[in-house]
Image (cartoon, rainbow, N blue to C red):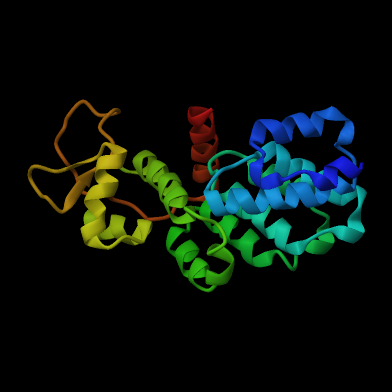
Length: 230
């Protein structure tokens, strides 16, 4: 077990971590510190290794006395950044109920996204700046997810409303429009066309209906988005 402690995690890649997990040391208590450092690296460098994070959760179940609440928060943050993939749910199954109350803020963030309460999500994230600052690139990952939902919910949407959903300044919107392959309406530059694939006509219509979906509607959309991204 001594060699595990001597490993320099800063020089190890995700494939090397996976090899280590499969090499017989997967249940070693000494592996916990290595995986915790690997998680810190993921947060700092905007990388993602879900298998390693799940392995760390399993080790915490085997060695509950060394469970780190900070690491649990970090794992869940990385899972949120992977939406619409189902990593968050997989992680929650591995976290004992007794920690759920302490993890309520980050769990609340996930629920807000899952329920398409995007304005609520951004408000909640503002109150968790210290926590969120640990995860490099989290805003962009969340905006990618929200953008996917918007494309499925709407044909077109007012730029002001879109900025609110994505928490973007108006001068930042064009960068997002380009990234998503959206366009501004020729008839009204304040209308953003986000989905034309399902429509025969290209005539722009203002988005109608509520900003938020029902749980049933969103569940259907969430599963569809997960399948699309697979």
